[in-house]
Length: 72
Image (cartoon, rainbow, N blue to C red; front, side, top):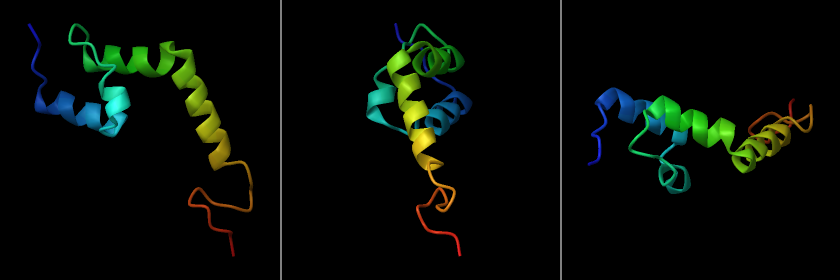
């Protein structure tokens, strides 16, 4: 039996996961949204490394902002 999410939980889910099917497929009905987010992003080493790589890429150069434009 699947548990229905409240509107608040749906909002939190979409803010955290961005509606990305890869992440949405990792949700378990037996866990709360908070537990799912903790498990997906902090217990999975591959996804943690993805965050590290993306974050490092955003700030790799002090001349570029996060949007990729050079500062004037």
